[in-house]
Length: 122
Image 1: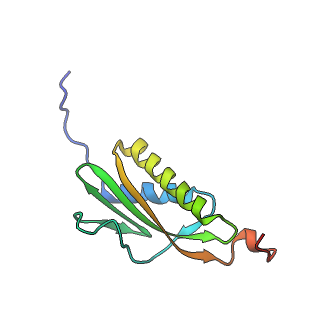
Image 2: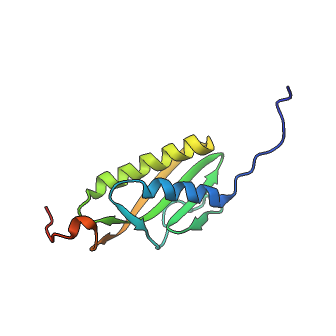
């Protein structure tokens, strides 16, 4: 069997969708957030952006930046670490590409989180 059967091309929007799905699966994430992207694209080629996600592929590795709104009852540090882990695992598993970095920007806290219905901060 021949090793080279052709090419596989994955649309940039597929990478963004994978990042979004992985991010939204983390407990404490309410939604993606609009906002500026600061860290990923500086001097690293052309970014792909959409719905709170920016991704850059450079030298075969992926760098990602996400903007999120979290629930007010969540531990923001734990949510951020959870996003980093979930996004990295999803990219490595689904795309077979190494991840250089996953930067998380918590842009807001949702005042209408289900956890906040009782009005306590606990």
